[in-house]
Image (cartoon, rainbow, N blue to C red; front, side, top):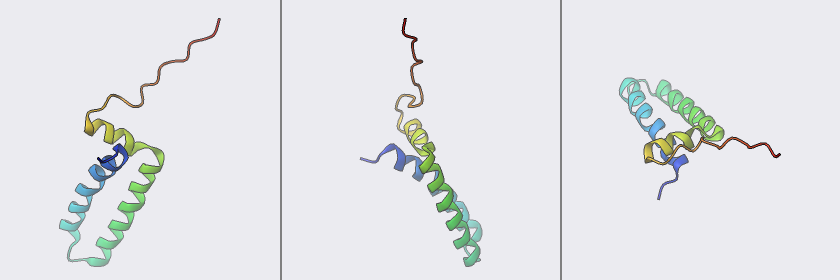
Length: 74
């Protein structure tokens, strides 16, 4: 089973990689630079937890960012 983090990363990276390949396949150095930028950007999003949120949305899980408000102690 794929984790939400991996699903989110794949949802972001695969379409962008296909678009870069279609547009830049004849310019190999530019395509490789675009792939490097895509890896860095996806890694940043994975480190900040954004891909977890995207993965939960794609998988149909409940909102992972919904945290109940803290109740003051009386």
